[in-house]
Length: 227
Image (cartoon, rainbow, N blue to C red; front, side):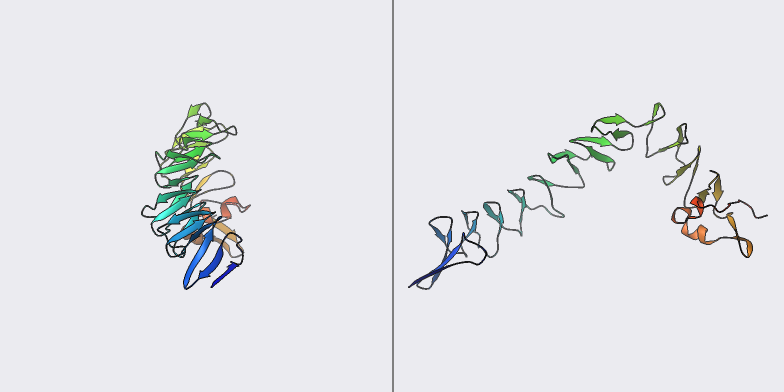
């Protein structure tokens, strides 16, 4: 006895029963048992059951220990797996750059892509034409990790703390200080604002930090001491 039918949603595979054995058709004239092989785009991969495998274009693979990258099967490494084109990509040690999906070694945590080349964002920039240029402050090169480029005339300041920001030609720590509208550095512990109840110390700004508050960019007059 022989019965066949087309699997719903797929015109490539047909089930057929011959006696008590189940066989599937792969492509034209290729029959296989789904426990012994897998059909992918008309090609058979033997040794992988169809129920436990997946297709990587026309090749079957085991997703438990293999990974598919753009039609290429790789042995799956430990940890998180990503693809860069058809290659495996370790985001901690590599960059995947450009439309060409080119793999480059990540030299530092500051390494970034500029087209298909690598640059260090601390002392280099990537321009609109995807060329790497030295990062400059005025006419001098500077290190964005260790320095600040401040004010209209671009003055280089060595950072006192890693989180410091520019306030005109000075620098401030947003965790403990504010840069006021008139570009003065004010200690949050000394900051007092005028309210309907008179002058009072606003301790919320001390605990929450200037960077999370609107007071530094508002029109409220800020003074370092109360009247």
